[in-house]
Image 1 (cartoon, one colour):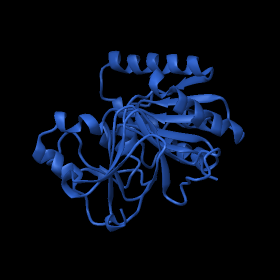
Image 2: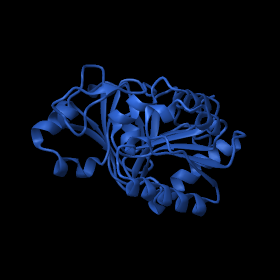
Image 3: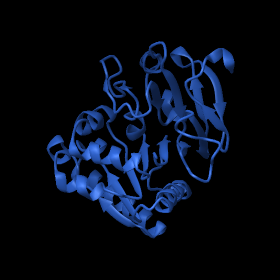
Length: 255
């Protein structure tokens, strides 16, 4: 049985997302998983020591508020991701969190490694898995190059199939030129593009929410903003607020 899965637009380890992270942890604990919060900063692995220390401190504060054990795994390179000792610490975790940074670097670093195998195995047996920003983008089959939109992207983890996630969506057009934004928002036929606002998440697989499930491609919105279903070039088809259910793999003419 798969555990819960969350795609987060922004806000990992912050008080605004504490209730969501607590529900993900509690869900796994009810399935017999440990009271551990695995924090994996790989997407930020190319950033400065100061920034990496910032993520560790931020995550530690959230773990303390949640009364759980923080396990911050310093997996910054592919060599780190091959480390069986790190992979072993992921086994039976309550919550596994892939935080923000560069989604392409994240996918390329973890794919086909003992660490990713451990993450996937834990999730498939009931651990909760969350990805924020870069972590959310990497969950799909393909990750566009968020920082250099004119270049090809990379293969993602493929965990959620043909879904392209654009995090920070309510700030997205203020950061990226229109032409580049249109390329990121235009996906091949058969790919669903979703925008997730900051401090907002799409969640599936919580045992206390039987109306949504990973098998049925149904998800519930949590947080302050909206989740946006998008047509090509960012034309909005529909948006959903906190508490509403989103079904992916759909035809736009059904909306």
